[in-house]
Length: 300
Image (cartoon, rainbow, N blue to C red):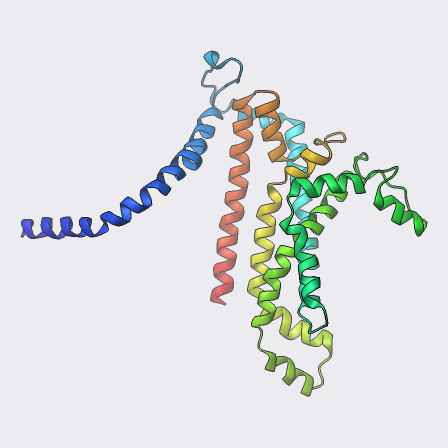
């Protein structure tokens, strides 16, 4: 009996062997470039590892995490991250939905509009950030020139502590809305056309059709778009790195920017790793909430 079980187990292993062989390169890469750095960051977060003095590295327990709670710059960066998320997620989702409703119409030249709206997404964020730095120039930028025509401004978009984050939010919404637009557009085209025809026969207005047919039909898509936008927004780095260097007065400094600054600029790898672990926990919590919300939406 035992010999039969051994033969069955060996036979099953031999059948699975090609799968293990083919997946081995991907698993090795995942371990080397994802799992191993994460484990090293977790370890370094409990040390005083300084990049220029690696020989003096000591285990200091939770000292870095206690330091985080007392670090006003960390709390400011955390607040800036949540502020960016709180502004970008609703604005980008609403803008994308409006664009999707527009390009879902059977209008002449609609393919050109779809291409125009998706073009910023296909452009590198670094390039977009540089372009918008010129647009936001307070003296000869396009934004102030346009507002000057209608008698508004001038605004100090990237040099004012109160205007810098909203300016980055506006640029980010413009750059990213096309991606969510395509997701909403796919959702809109899945809604059966006969529902709108029946509503028209019953005399429903455009707003009533949107409220009672479009929004319920896009429920799963709205949850998905909101959550992927939320996770992407927490990783804000390129825009403040290119446009403001975290300023003015740390008004655009975020958690990811602080990880970069502490680790690469100040060489304090231990402290930088602690910030990265806290950021990982935040994203993990968001992912768990996302999974739960999507599951509940699918079951309802």
